[in-house]
Amino acid sequence: MNWQSATVPLLFVLAAALPSSSPAQTDPKATEQWEPVPKVVTPGPAGAPPSDAIVLFDGRDLSQWESSKDHSAARWKVHDGVVTVDKASGNIQTRRRFRNYQLHLEWQVPKDITGEGQERGNSGVFLASTGPGDEGYEIQIMDSWKNATYVNGQAASIYKQAAPLVNAMRPPGEWQTYDLIWTAPVFSAGGAVESPAYVTLFHNGVLVQNHVRLAGETFHVGKPRYTPYAEAAIKLQAHGDPSPPLSFRNIWVRPLN
Image 1 (cartoon, rainbow, N blue to C red):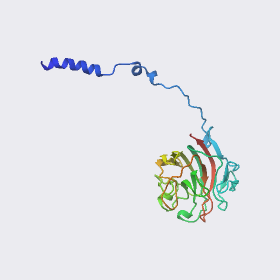
Image 2: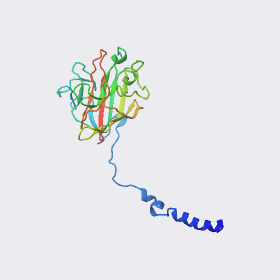
Image 3: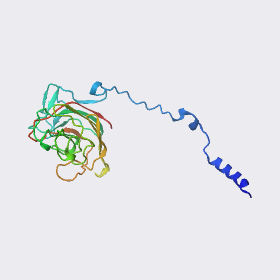
Image 4: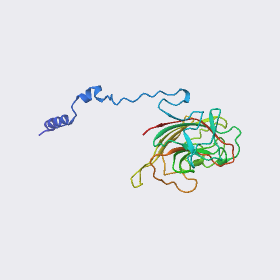
């Protein structure tokens, strides 16, 4: 058999192996998805909460908050549309409990801030509070404008776990914004970690934590570890450093469960 005659059956085999045209390959409608239709959410103007958000603080009162240590009414100072940390009364947390969510909050370091390092405008937002003190998963809040400290403890760090990609801090006296996505850890019935926690964070509109995997809860001393929980409060820290207290405004959350 010469090579020409051997080529003929081979061409038939190759042609049979090629996929034939089908409606799914020729009709663009075959790949269109029409349901379920996403619900309509109206964006808020200029940083205001979207229509489906839970407003945690709107400048008027702390009805959505409680003391972390004993669940009594939160006693931080509400004035002029903001709430200022009361270091003597301790941490506050949301009355509601959450799992996965989008969170927006704005915070301000006083213009006349004093101190240096970790003793300069220190606070924090705990994305899941697992105890009455500083237990949980903390995103650091502090003055990182020309203020040197350990990088996994500066503003927008996952405390003691991950430094921010960049320092997007505005000067003291100006308002800072955090916009973040929290993916809570998942635990088995026996308490084992089935899926770790992740966080994405924008500081003043700049991506500083990009879907970072957490090694566990954040601790000032010691290695991170996980403690099983189902849902948890969002907690704001009243840090005991001697510098003047920070203020917060415009806090809202969108559950993503």
